[in-house]
Length: 284
Image (cartoon, rainbow, N blue to C red; front, side):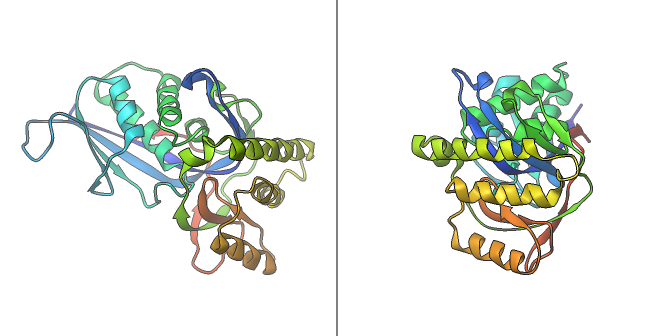
């Protein structure tokens, strides 16, 4: 086989609680989030002796631009000693809260498994991607969502791969991003972490108390916004102004975790459109 290709959906994280363990396999997050119809396509090829490639290390490209992508590199090095060319394509940005690092790691793990006939289970591959995220401080809970797909609430840490699927699917979501947030600086700061965790617990408890009728997109966005304020994460002026503008027009909106970005159940000026999809990562 000359190449292998896989897809993993983007994930929008609404609420999260950090759960740090003694090892990456026992570290993750609780929270609320959902996957969408867009994500990443990863194509893997074996590295040849072509002089234009560096044969000493993996060559990773994101939308045709060569980049340093430690999370993806970690996945490759864990699964094979072979050096490869990775071509990742997406129409969503890295570092703005769409779980692109997790999606890339997961799609690459699936494609590597196919290319080299590694005979790993999907869950083993997903755990490899999750560990890479944790080790590189690029995420804590995206991979498990991207593994299952759908609108998910996690009352157990993500490394356990136990989720509750909510009956919210095929609904349009509108988004706009302004800038990235450094995930590592956020989740590794003890003071910020404690405030996030306390706010996240309160938010999840509010979700638990909702009856089936009230467990809808509108109410979940409201609780997500309360979390963004309570946690102290909502502080970007453009994000605050955009959320207020949406609410003034009868919509509901919140901040995408972790990025200076907004998602809403109503169209707003300059927004892109996504669809909530109950589809996890897969080979292409």
